[in-house]
Length: 314
Image (cartoon, rainbow, N blue to C red):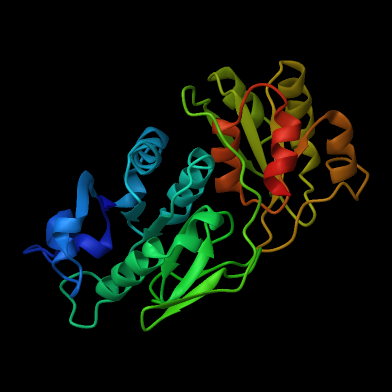
């Protein structure tokens, strides 16, 4: 038995009378768009019906939990592409101990378009989910005939059907004509918590950044901060005093880079340089982007936080 967790998105949407595209299909109707899938062999869970850009962290955790807590042989999640990578990443963290394929998919064209990519993507997702080898790769994302690791996949173009890529890694494989080929190695699997979810803020670094940004978040009870730096993980000097105060209060701070590829490294000295940040106790976020680092910090175990991040970023 395969479980389908339907959460809306473009793959389940059609043009409405007002001209806008909105969710119109539940899980059963979505399955009906694909030839050769027997709905009788699928447990359908209609979890959400809406756009993915409005999903809170609690909603994302609910999707991951629906993928984890069941007796199905495999799970397919349909999702909007705007935030698909975030949900896939959280699902990978929360399903690290699960020995079953978990596949996330969506589409760039809505279900009312004659050349829609949804049916093919859903068929490919089912094909990958039925392949027992998939369980060794953690949560994967399948679109446009390509299998990506949830750890690295990202949406690179606003509208192209070829939008999903893995800039920080390599695609895990491909699906072609019902045949699955794996060629890449999976990233390390790391288990996250899900009972408590700490509020985490992203603070981007840029010229003329407001030096009060970090303190503003601290005053509002934030329990973690992600610095989106430049280059190898360097931030504007104006943010450093706030970072020192955050660490002094026991609020963990993680630094990542706005660059599309490559990991942060404590290379540069001087105000805001990565070397100085490391000396302050800032945690290196590896090649994670700011969105993933926020989610990872929100779901990280309280103890051995630095070791946990080191295992996560490899």
